[in-house]
Length: 228
Image 1 (spheres, rainbow, N blue to C red):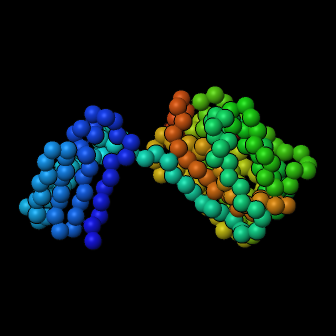
Image 2 (cartoon, helix red, strand yellow):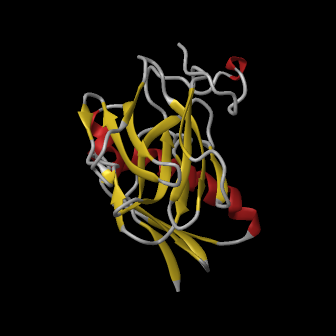
Image 3 (cartoon, rainbow, N blue to C red):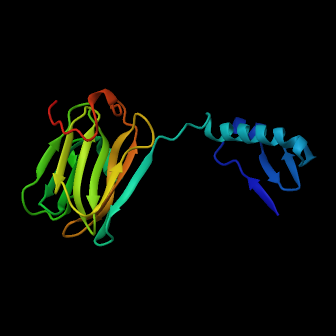
């Protein structure tokens, strides 16, 4: 039984350099247009295998692999309602505002503006919503909240130190603290479940050109400060 690595979508000059590389459990086989040679697979030949793997990666990609910057937090909440995903909305631009509607028990609805376009309202669209506009260069770097069968409380903290919170400040639900895994990344879009209320929510983080991550000098994530 063999494990094969096939080069797909490489340029003509790369094809001339490598027809294909096949890694066998019993041996390493190199084939070209004019010759063919087999090396026994042993500990002494492991550096050859590692080098070929690195070369193949750069041939296929054209450049060394870049470290990932995207991460996900969630999903926080219950299982009722229908799933929603706003990954396509991020193509309209970074998050520039949110509209949240809440009462003294639950988050009723949430709507996000990406660039200049608003997403669909998730949850109950009736009633007035509180608008949270972001300044140019401002991004969300932390979300605190609480949930039971539905999302009960949510607070957004930005890289400028501003915090916007909605819903009941105290309750018996499960608390969460969502932050990106990588530095200099912000909230790019949300997903979750919704129906008559916002049942659950998840947070997707990544880099955005021109918007930095959390500046720790602005204070604690738990300090409420809505002023610029």
